[in-house]
Length: 438
Image (cartoon, rainbow, N blue to C red; front, side, top):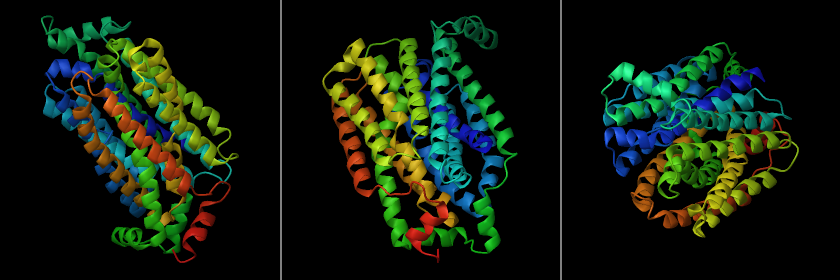
């Protein structure tokens, strides 16, 4: 459990980095005079998309070659560098660079984290431990948005932020330059958590399964693992299935992760403080839902929770098409349903199945490849979404129909290809799928 909690902090930092950007994106927009296209690039190169994609393809195969602990020892140093650059940014290129470096670190850490959690779990608590990791993914945005709400202009703690800003940049500084300090302080909290996580993860032992495989002499080079991943029929089918369900869901989730407060402000007409509050409440439902599921996911058929989460997501977006986003009641219903979806999300099962359905020798590499595909295409979609959505949310209904179609595909493909892994050891799953020679 201790190791699961330490590694799960990576999920806190992953989602936290995405939401830290989104909670203050309007403030950075006002400070630097950014267009919607600039915001699209920030999303595209961040932990939400391409930055994480680049990191994942590197980190996955490195974790298979040098071990999970190797990633934990060095990766968060990169994360802290990226966050520090964001905190000190005074131009768009600098801000974009910070987002990219942070995103690369997130991508490097994700395959190793999910792999390590699965390999360190017992048969009857593997799903539970993945859910704990998912709870951390919910706690990150919940706390970050809560801080963003308190520190935002008009928030309870904005006074100290304003004083800090004037002390650093002068009493006559422009209002936009002062207000953006609330976002800088939010990123400071991520820097602190990253340092704590790095300290804890450096003390972890290597995964027992990885150690056993290295001792058996069955380890392969990175090139050999890549070849096997692309030539083994079962591995190729598994990558296609998992990438499809995660991609179609993540195209929706990535937009919501970065643009949710911005959508509330432009399409819903809410203030930055209120938008962050509602986004924060949505993540409270993520944490509560995931906590409940964690008690049953190793005992109840995965199909039930998979359908439950996507049903909540589809209902939320169908209500949006009906115009509910323009009313306070509708915004609240959307917020709650989207939170429930994230708590019982496709990502929970992608993380679980992605770490179960591949042999240990290229388990992290396979996840890195899929994460690269998903977050890379999410980067492109982020740019397309800003074009569809428009500067003031005039294309929101069209965007909502796109979301419904993507979520429906994830539901249908998931139901068709869902594996039966509950109650089986990783070794048993590997032998059933690949035989004894892999």
